[in-house]
Image (cartoon, rainbow over all chains, first blue to last red; front, top):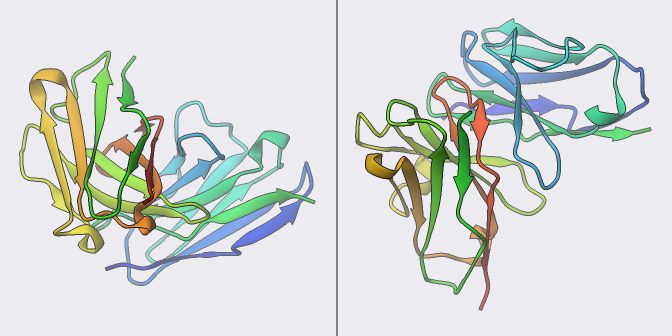
Length: 106
Length: 116
């Protein structure tokens, strides 16, 4: 199975900050990498698919990059509604998620 | 607009089974992949498996093989996930989600509590 490792596991940031989350795959997954936002009591929400494509309706402050084994999710200017847990997911083989990154208010 | 509507919360005894449904309302899902993902309390997202109703055989994550059964009823646009031999570690919110390369539509989640 392909292992997905996110870092950091959690971070504290302020509104307006630039936030970067990284995700590393245990083998090449080309660009079969997606990012989700998850808030308590709600279903996960797709933000970025195929490593860098912005899902319809998602604000442009979210962006993704990378290919092969190393990927990043960037929030250019953190907004109050962005405090949540973020997961990367590979769909190169049987899908699997990273362990999550919790973004908290500083 | 297609929505995935899941069945309600369940409380089950250890050793029993649970069957959760996921109905696509407002559209046809027979050619879509329907996946199942769960989140145990304080844990991350855990992939369980998928079915593409028009193609038939489901595909299961290695962790759940032998204990999970995913089926679909094309006539009612409903997918089902049955998990057997439940333990307290199966207490979780179970989600269905549409998609093959990415999951763009999710059900609202179903809480399954396993308790004696």
